[in-house]
Length: 282
Ligand SMILES: [Fe+2]
Image 1 (spheres, rainbow, N blue to C red):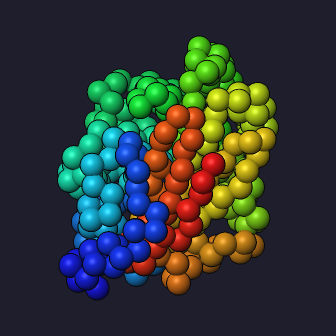
Image 2: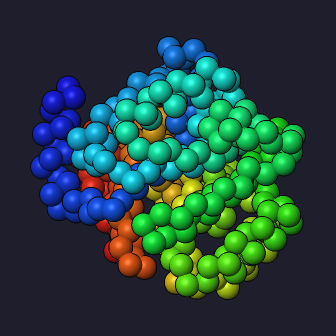
């Protein structure tokens, strides 16, 4: 579909659930490689990201910020990060990145946050905007597919939540903190999810927990909090499959989150403009 056709499709469908300002955009698992022409599983990550960004420019221009929930790179290369930054600059908004299992957190900290991160240290981030607090956790463990939060980061999370108990909050990380019913993915989730969930369960101000990693749409409620993934911009995995399986029938997508009061309403927008897939109203 040509960009102008996608634009028309988006304008037709987004009427049902228009992004209401202020809003932000979540994308995930862009998986860019050092070589912009690289393909994996016969899919080009660069081209797929470009399609998603075309739709976002048409359907969700002028976000407050963009959140990238990990696997920003497929190979941890400097060139992949620089190219991702260039592409996302087209959305004309601040971009916040957190690391996934394919990323290099030390390099990301340097390039995206201007920070020197010690090897194996966690890239924790927090910022306040539009009356909300955003807490970005680092679940990546270098050299491993699975994730871990770690006791130091959990202590930091607890203190950061305690510091603003009345501020509506969104917590984001790369790995899924809850099982998704797919054995091979649930074998590489967050090793210390239980104590993490205990902290989140006890924080009534946490309205949503956003993540990537599973390359598919997933929405569930736990203790009044919405736990939601966003599909990859690159390649989708088949839901509930016991072993690795691609899902070529599902499309790349981005999540748009509108913030008002203590409500976070979201909608997924697909890269072919034929969404919304789902609208989630709190
Ligand atoms: Fe990924």
